[in-house]
Each structure stands twice: as structure tokens, then as C-alpha cells.
Length: 143
Image (cartoon, rainbow, N blue to C red; front, side, top):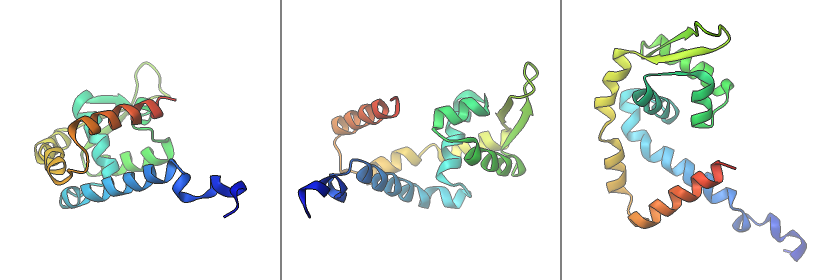
């Protein structure tokens, strides 16, 4: 390929290995989450709610780097399943507060071993490399 098109080579793209790794990670979680009836995106929503119990939709979207178009149907489905409640804020009716229910909290026990199981399966990176990658990815996300 002519030198003027070097920037279009897939091997020269930072975005591609990031994208492919993201897909690989989600795929690795699937055998653990599917029996629980969860998607990876639902799982990360639960992780925030297990930590905070209640959060407004805007904060949830910001934390997870997800837009309202992704979150709204996901949260509606989780509410329909009885895992969360959605209520308008008393201070500002425009703000929706998402809270985890007892049923949603019960999933925490079923999910607690998933991160450890996945780290056992993946030995591509040393602990130090994984920590470096973690810092670099969050640095990239904070731009």
C-alpha cells in the first residue's frame, strides 16, 4: 500500500485492538452471565448499584460511559424483572433515580466469584501489566 495510506492499515490503528479486546472480554463473561439471564451491560449496571444502592440515570450513564438510548431500555427491562426500581427525584422531577431491589441484591451473591474465575482463565498479562493497562485505559477514558 502506498505510504500515503499507511494511516488506513488496520495494524496501525489503536482503536482496533481496543475494540477486539472489548469483544473478547464480553465474550469471556457470557458463560457466567447467561445462566443468570444477564448481559455484560446489565452486569456492569448491577456493579454500580451494588456499590451505591441508588443513583440517578445521568450519573449511571456517566460512570459506565453509556448514553440514555442504551440505558433506558436496559433499566426498563431490569425494572420489569424486579431487579431495580425507577422513581422521579423529589428534588427535581426531571431526574430519574434507579435503586436496586432485594431481588437485585440477591444476584450479588451469585456474581461474587465471576471476577476471580475470569482472572484464573486469563494469564495473558502479568498482574503488573494488568495494572498498567488499567491505568492507561482509564487515562484514555478521562480525555
